[in-house]
Every structure is written in C-alpha cells, then in structure tokens.
Image (cartoon, rainbow over all chains, first blue to last red; front, side):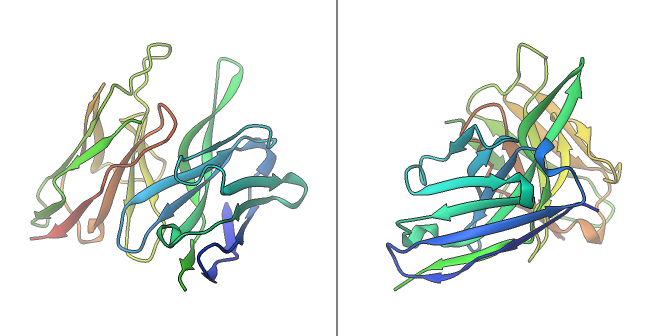
Length: 127
Length: 113
C-alpha cells in the first residue's frame, strides 16, 4: 500500500523557518518525482514545488521561489520542504504528493499531476 | 501562467441526477507531440487530501466509479457525474499539468439539492 506520512508542521512567527518532511512507503521511491501542494484554510489548491526522481531538477511557484527549497533523500525514502522567510500568506495545509509516472514506447515519464497524497500538515505563520 | 476557471462555484443536484462541472483554461493544454490533453480532475472531501479521479482529461483512475467521466479538449473541459450519490458530495478541482506553474481551478462544491 502506498503511503506518504508527513511531519513538521506547526506555528512559526513571520520571518521564521520550518522544515516539512514526508516519508514514503509501499513503492520504489526513487522511481518517482514528487511535489508539494498547499491549501490555505477554506481555500483552493496551489502547487508549490516539485522535484524529479534524483533531485537534480526542481521547480517552484513564483510565490515561494527563493524562500523555499525542496529536496529528497532516496536512501531514507524521504521528501523535504525547507521554508524560510515565512509570511502570513504561507499559512496553509501542506501536502506532499507523488507525481504520476507512466511508460510508453520503452521510455518512462513523470508528469505533474498527483496520484497519491500525504495526509497534510498545517503550517501557521502568525505573530 | 495558465489560468484555470471552473464553473459553477456551487452545484446543488438531486440524488440520482446528473452533475456537470466545467473547467476552462486560458490557453490550450493539448500537446501537439502526443495529442493528449494535460488536464486532471480531483475530488476532495472535508478533512481529506484530494483524490485523483480523471487524468488526460478523460482517463478514469483505477477504482473510480464509472459514473464519473471527463471530456473536452484544448481549453474547455467537463467533469460529469452521471447519477449523483450521497458519497459524491465534495469539492472538485481541475488542474493543468501542461506547463509550470501547474495551476488549479478554484473548485466546485457539489451538494445535495
């Protein structure tokens, strides 16, 4: 069974830092790209960041670029999001999510939609 | 950025009736290289993460009931629930994965009339 178990949320003051973690099980972690998606309470979904299978390629939403860093440790089946210079508008539930991987014509591809999600962790930025 | 616009915001439907949700993208999400539409639909229930329903605009995810279907191409897409069940009450989101940033629609709340 595929599982993504998240940890690391909490309350932090504006300008502070927080690191989110996501531990994967039930699949070969280093075959898959991963992402973080957030949802402010009562609001819609916003893609935050993504990483490829080996960590060499990353991508960010403009709203977090330069402040957040996505990384992974395939030996630990883990995904991370380091969040610095946090602002009130970063307050949200943060989800880790597995990017879909499909194979066609002898090649495999990772696309940016999400077939499994973590349970979510709440980050609250408040003074 | 590709802007995704969903309508309506809220959709009251009687049990057993059809529910239709629309999603429009500000530019085409149809790839000329593989003729696939890079459009996905999710269902989200309160307190839960989103659940994948439909991808490539019309491919149903394994285990999703066949009353859910997706259609459309280019910039205009539709999610249809052919016969609404009580367990289908939820928020529904479309998302484009054609280009970064990978944007979501604002969501449609399906409820029982």
